[in-house]
Length: 587
Image 1 (cartoon, rainbow, N blue to C red):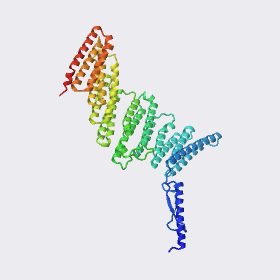
Image 2: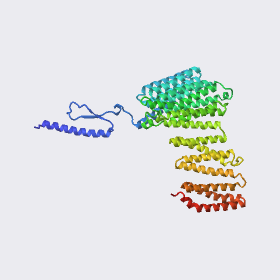
Image 3: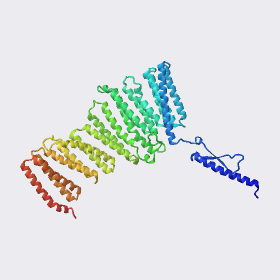
């Protein structure tokens, strides 16, 4: 039985529920939906079943991260702030120096103190504010480098051994922070600072062997970090910086290179061999290790802005490996030639041929592993490039052209047999070089005597026949058309060059072109090759054009009569036998 007290209590509960619903609607308008709501403990006077909700402050939620636009704002504010702070310190230092308040030793102690302060705060904040801590740690390393440089180079406060030792310690600190915090940016700073140390502390001694030894030690450290972490950007910075240092060393030792052989040449050559192995072989070795133990070794990444690679990237061989595989030996070979200018070129030619053997053996070894087939082909292509360089250094003139032509044919044949587009691409590149060389030959009117039976003529016709053979090797398509048409036009140009040297040579050229065109037409009809018939008809039309544009003005009257009448009769015969030749192919 309801009593007035129960009715009053029910009315109060209904009124509280209605007010609670209005409060919840108002909170949803004010607080974002992403902010979670949790029930608050009910007040003592509240009735059970009417919970009160209050929002959790966003900053207090566990694992809270700033939105993307807020992180960008923090990124730029932090960098602007550190930049303004550094500028303020510079202005304060300048003002203090102008006033005579701060002596050079105090300035450098202050710089060391700023570096230590940035290092401590950056280290402590790294787990919570990574981007901000990166800026502080990078600023601390930069402050140490600048302080050490100015203490030695500008104010002569410390001797060279001390300054050099401090530079090495700072570089080691950068690598330690990079490995400890798993961040490639500090390794990049350490690599740049370490490679630049001999130049920041340059004393004019020009000790090339010491420069090479120090550079190799720094590169050994960067290579070890790359092998452990797989940071590709570190490999690129190390390679570019290392080769620049090596070229500077060659330039510094240039007066010595012109004289007798000495320790500078030996040191430079050892450094070049080290860099060839470091940047040419290390990426391949690391990839093999990753394939054998993918759970233990991290796949190669850029090192800045990426934390992991997709599955497809793990299955595909990194492009940077191909670049270093091809580029490292070529750069090393060219720098070696600069180091030993007194050695004859044919010696380097034999060295290049020896390199071909090494790269061929490695390619055959790696080809047995399916994921490494792509790099095996790249290594084989590198061997082909070295073979080309060796042939260019060993051979000259027509012999070189024949050797390169044979190499191009072999590349095309291997590309077809193996079905590898990269090998075929190498053949295309070499064919373009040979084509340009052949074009220069064919446009040269100073042909050797006797015509048709000289070394240049025989070399060129062999090259033209090789191009035609490549066209035959290619499957029906654009490549076959291009090579076939190139061989056809080259043969016409070759006939024009060789026959035009005779007396009334233009007449012989016209006859040769006409006979050649007629043969092509008959072959096209009998073989049922529409494209060959089109080329033949185009050739015959070219013969007619030459009769009117060239022969009519340059040949004697008797030649004109014979050519016009002869070709007129030939064309009539071809037209008469055209249906019969066409039917010869019919079953």
